Length: 446
Image (cartoon, rainbow, N blue to C red):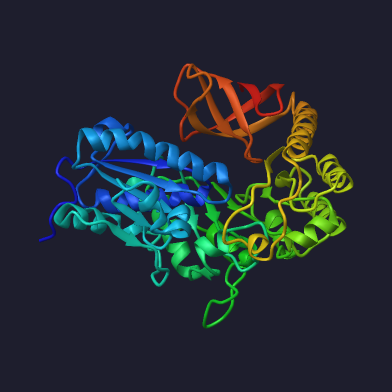
């Protein structure tokens, strides 16, 4: 019989980064729960301390190391504490993490989330560090039901990795090439989730539009997958992220029209509005092509909610390049946009090809401040148009800003906050929008 992973059986996970990381944290915690641990929400009660990391931006890695620095104090107080670094930074940095943080016990990359229980046992039994960054194993994504934060909504990974090699991006290095799960396996997982009480499922992939291209005995498409999952009895809402403009197929818009439980929301990163910058980024499309796709999406689904990602100050970006990005935002009118300053990353094509991070920091700051101010203005203008409308909300629980109120999401994935004397978590309800800001909608129950 296997030796228990821990003596006091308490684990804490700090998750940094994207929705895929949230799912991966669930996988790791599920493996530990299966080995007898309890998941706790604070570090002081835990003897297994884990951080699931992100390497997309330098700031995310700094956040991970800052957290590790604080955990060092707990390790001094209790040498039996096991500290683990998981995910993308672990995959990218490997044993370098042990040099910078020698009190870390486990460094486990992006293919090892379901084996964290084994690694904790090994550390307990031998006192030796574990380095696991090989990519020759498949992640058993369906084995994580117990560790989910909520029964009402769930993430389901349909593929992992990315083939695009955008020059700024470290994902192909940390996540590997694209691999898709069989359609039937995904549908079966969704059926299990709905049977457990899930009403909303979000399908995840770093580049989900290319789902299924290497599956055998025949290729599959994202549209096929959406029709199959949407047909799961009892599934009320279906979403997917993230889309790449060079891979999006026209039939996807037909799926939005045909499937009433496929929500009108598209996370559709442009990254830049400049054709020259897009070329250096190796994105595979132009400003005009991107706008054509935006127009097609809104023609097919007039109430489509669009979200975007934008990088400011990429190698060689001029003022003219930046103004094209401003124009793209103004024309697209994203309901929300994730805007970041470019930071050079090791192991990216940009670094390997010698593309200079040559935009001065003061220019990056000025440009990002300008765009963020305009984006907030445009988002609020669009949200004001929703005042007076009645929309269906899926409740997520007490508002993070004001726990006396309830918040949920509309079909376009926007936060809607309402006054209510009862917990609306996991419930569908109607609300009339009475107020709007750039970041949220406010309403009253009807």
